Image 1 (cartoon, one colour):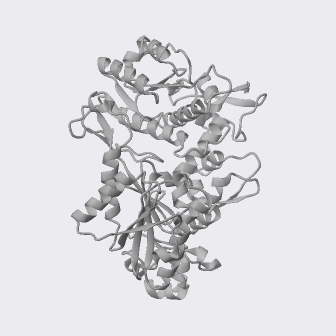
Image 2 (cartoon, helix red, strand yellow):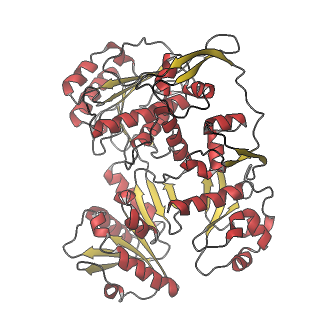
Image 3 (spheres, rainbow, N blue to C red):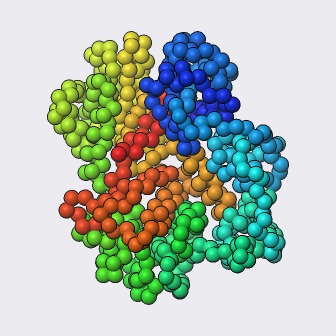
Length: 589
């Protein structure tokens, strides 16, 4: 599957760097195709169906073979079923990128250093060279897009050197020397992972006036901090159980530390967003007594927002304190907490189950496209999604949509499906558990092959738990063109997630965990949202609405709904796992 995604990405990138766009006839012929956006550019795309040929596609789109190759150079290696073809949207600004040339990677070079050399961003370099998602290799030849003139460190002069100590990170060294991680990386292009005993350069960075530049002020997790609060600052407190005194660190604490690391990546990327940023981190040590002590610290009353821990009682304590001191509370972890209903200072960052089901039903039915819904019910099987199924069926009755219920015992068999005539079907199970999926996936895939031969189609609708599926289970739902709803997006191969992961590795010398959802990406999105929302005048997060933020993994559509005194998130994704391996994430409006 990894290689299939790589082929799809390569087809897109090669189309992106084509020197000549397709003719006007091509654009006119594909305007009814769906549109996807990659790296800020819009493209029509088409998934090749079985038995289609390059010749038949040229007739379908009314173009020549050469024009087809021009838009999709990978076709010269042959056409494959479920391959994705891309065509630039009419009026796409900068749809074609002129090529400046190539670059052969030398040992010790970094993605950041190469992008700086050619005047482009790291994101642009990775988009043009998808192989970089698997790491940079000496001797590799990279495509380089035309950027600005080669950049130099004209505003940086030699400073001093530093002997790396055990446990130090790029962030801690940069902070200790009053510079940014980006400036530290630029002064050490050969350094990708810090090692104890390594000697690195510490540049002295000056502004045009000769004064040292102002930097983001942030703290690593600590039991106590005593910062000086200044006017014009954006101040955010992160109160989490880092469990710094425990060895080894508990798994839950490691997840919180990863969240915080991702959060700091966002802070660094927004260091020039306006006023100075100060991040204060406190370790609750998993104790309500420690939280009580933290709430007595004088600087806490000056915060604009506090990111609260995933403990009901501790959240309640912090919410009460914040209500008294008019400080916003961001609840990123406790999905079922309803403190926001009565407390005007609390922001629930997760859409409620009731609202999620309602939005999912509406969004999914909008993609039914005339197919017959069939609900799968196993005798004695799990029914953990009964509430959602009942809402979906009720709305179908309300819209006069006829549906069927197929009851089976043990495993679904071909004979159970034999009563369904040729046509288009959407199957909806009553459970989101992997153990239940194993009872019907094989039969549904065989049924889909049969329907495709007769002109019909078979799809599967399902649940957020499916984002954790791997191996054959994941392949099984993808081959059924599965559609699910989820509070977070799911595409680890997306360019923006790849960039954040690469930056995380550069900063901290290791990769994010494979948790679903990723705690590092969650921290990054929370940081981006909070800093962006607080960068405007007033620095308030408790108005009736807050600007929408579409994140790498988590998005925020915050508002005051119904009779609730606080704010809540309304963001919900529909995720389509396609047979081609393409994963499409739709953020519902």
